[in-house]
Image (tube, rainbow, N blue to C red; front, side, top):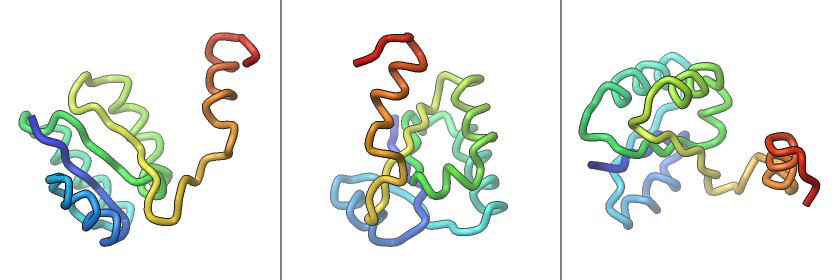
Length: 102
């Protein structure tokens, strides 16, 4: 199985290419949707990395793919500018999911 990256900038793609990850740079919502459909139907792709900015553009579609399919595993990653999520994202997620305050 392969890892593939959908990125909104070439710097992130270049960095992950050093680790052997193939990828593509896309910018527009329709391009992202087209590539998501293509990559999610490719049996060779096991992990699909997508930058947080692109995932925000197609949030509903990414969430549907995560819930309806076991492969590829879709992982949202920060780009070269850092994470777009708040600093307490993980603790808030646990608190909302489990109901425990950490």
